[in-house]
Image 1: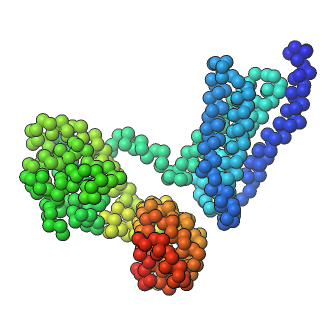
Image 2 (image 1 turned 90 degrees about the vertical axis):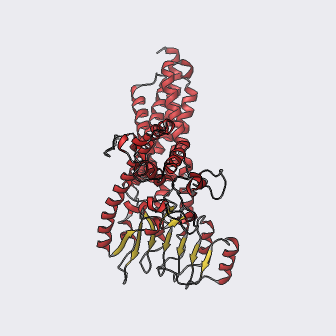
Image 3 (image 1 turned 45 degrees about the vertical axis):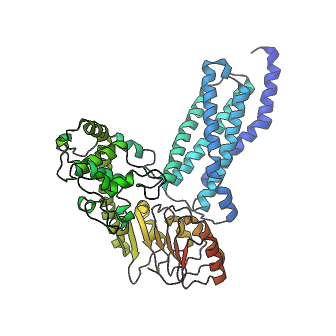
Length: 498
């Protein structure tokens, strides 16, 4: 080093050691403290809950900043225009700051919203490694800048570690929020199918193609338990019978007289159009093939090899990849459901409750009920079902030991339609956990110590259609006020189902 630069270097070193080094060591000390603090405090301090819920907002800042820092450092190795110490130091400093804030908020969310399990802990540990990695990276960069040395190997090692930890932490966070298979689920369709596929020429036009299309896009709203528009579309026999509307879904030989074809051809926005707005409609190919099948007698024995119309054959060829994929998904879902049913029945037998397929949901989800007399059933018993929460559509916990904190776990049942909390200790303090359930329509709070103020939480329940409040201490004036603001929600002052 040139001697005339030596005092300048010493001055930089002194400034780094006196001012910047202590600041950069503080986050590392903080992360070490967090590592030693307990996870299971489960505090419900309102301020901590409020601050913790900033975590989903804050976490995007360090992700973007760390990636930008890495990009500038790597590009700077090949292009001097990107080798700007002022910009890199600013990005590193911002990354350290926002990572620290995001982790602080995440820890508060972790303990105040009672997150448990390995996913939550791994997400937290990954965040600490990310925070520690970017802090040490900044520390080394500042040290090398003070020494007026080029970026060293150690800096790249810690920056790489930070990026790997960031990717892992993000994956754990996504899995925690959306489910463990959130990232891999879309790739299932790319895997080789284990289904023994028919020779295309041996396929039946109804069983293998038309029925698959109807099952995928129509049967969820047109089955024995949910006959929207009085149309049944879940079997060949049902298609040919008239429902309450006296209109047949399919009239053999007459596509234009078939209610199925009438509905799918209605313009978007029409209240009778099928499927309704927001759901994927039949493609042009699917409509043409179903119309052709009806026009040719709508027989269940009509084979694909009998089709001579070249335009229909071309449409069928275009449809086959989607048909195979839909068949794979239908059978895969059926297999998963049957496996879940066996495991759920075993858990239910051990805990003394009843679990059965929900007939109101076409037996695609499950219904759980307490037996009489009800067994001891509280937080621990409820959590035994946690791997299967997405499979439940109706839950009755009447006369159980569940309390407000347990509503946090019930909020993970994203397919829940009906929830019975009759004769429990629920005061309503935990009702906000349930407000974002997209399908919850019926809530039974009869004979609970529901507090007046907590009834107002139900104003935020977007899908709620019916609430039972019989035997609760809630004042009539408050019920009247609730009905005034949510007139579409029926308030039932009867005991209701259990």
